[in-house]
Structures are given as structure tokens and as C-alpha cells.
Image 1 (cartoon, one colour):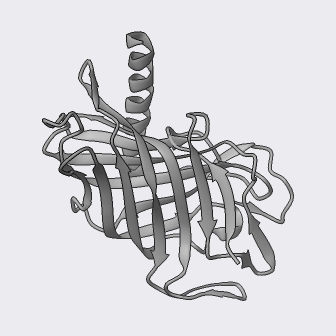
Image 2 (cartoon, rainbow, N blue to C red; image 1 turned 180 degrees about the vertical axis):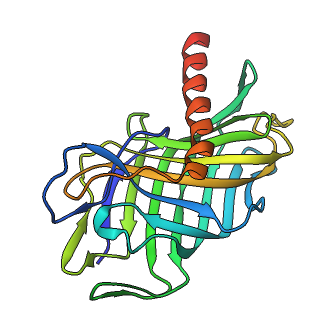
Length: 249
């Protein structure tokens, strides 16, 4: 039985996976994150013929749940798949390129078996899946982000193949504010707009965090410094993009 939850795409705000535990004081926290096992440019943005763009990745990563009850599920070897499309024209505001309307999904599938107390999570388990609409990708030079937020008029549905840990059910708050951010770095070629008006093709390295409002569970966690550093670039791009777009309109 899978767990589901509606949410959306665009910035770092948020919180976490709920467990059947006493409620924590903080209403939001990052509940999961990942980093690539090697700095390879396997996160690709492809400007296809016609009006579609796609972002896809099939990449070995280290995935971690940050909820206090799930700390044993940290640095789990997993395969990342990310796929999304858009036909929304890209815009240039100052030096910032951006394109909205992304619709797609991402999954983290474990490639190793992990035991947490009495619970065995076999290899091949979908640790986390996010289905989303109305995402945004933005960047300048060699750095950027793919972001989503429930306040940005889109949606995200969280799903996990893990339904319980040691008898504690894993649940997402169905009414929560949720967000995610993929920070992009070492992007080549640099961000630009193609002849068809969509972002030009590029490849990047990536890290990411995933947030949801706390339903039940034990307190949030702070992303690792290396992860947080790249993600802060994504937050800056997101904020700058929204400010400039509001000014332009």
C-alpha cells in the first residue's frame, strides 16, 4: 500500500514525513535529501524539436531521510530518475534565465537492502516519488535550480514504498505546504535560450532537498553543508526570478 499526498513546486520552505509519534514544535522541516555519489553531469535538460523540453536523469545517488525516526535510512544507495516536460517559453530577466510549466515526476529507488530495527527495506523499494505540475527551472551562468512549492499554483503528490517503520505508520499531511529544490551546478553549456524560445540544452551536477509540513514526527534536520550550499543558490535564483517577473509584469 502506497502513501500519497498533494503538494507543489518552487523553493525551499517546508518540512517533513509524519510518523505516529508526538508532534514536534517546528511546523516545517526538510524530511529528505540526496547528493550524487560522484560529480558527474548526469542531470540533463534537453531542448527537443518542436515545443517540448525534457529533464531526465538516471543516476546513482545517496538518499537520506532526515526525520529522527528514520535516521537509519541515511546515505542509502539509490537510483534517481527525473523526467519532466514543458512548452512554456523561457524568459530572460537581467542575467537570469527561467522557464515554468514543468510537469513530471522523480523517483529514488534503493539499490541496497536496509534494516531499521525490525523492519527490512529490500533493494528495489521506491524510497520517495514526487509527481508534480507547474515547476520552474532557472539559472544564470553555470548554476541554477529546479524548484517546486505548493504556494506556486501547482501540485505535488508524494509517494513512498515504505509504509511503516517498526510499527509506526508513515503518513504525509494531506493539507500541508510542501516544496522541493534541485540545486544545479557545473552547468554546461551555460544557461541560455534556444532558437525555438525554450531553454537551451545543458547538463549539470545536482543535489536536492524535499520539504513537507509536519503531520506527526520528531523534528527537522539541517541539510549537509555541501548540499545546503548548492541549494542556497537555487533559493537565490528562485527569489530573484519571482521578484523580477513581478516587476516585469
